[in-house]
Length: 54
Image (cartoon, rainbow, N blue to C red; front, side, top):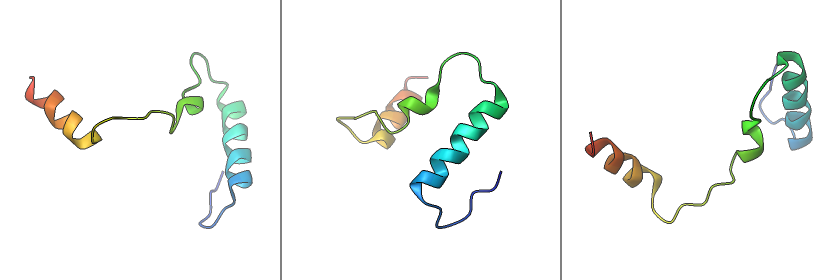
């Protein structure tokens, strides 16, 4: 499948659905969580803090 620059949201959704059918995914559908998280702090700050814990 090819995703070309300037593709519409509808076309991208169709490609994702076709890809999911083709792969026959098992387990959790992570695409439904894409873009759903809201953070109170900057993600880079969180990442740096987690790395400093090691």
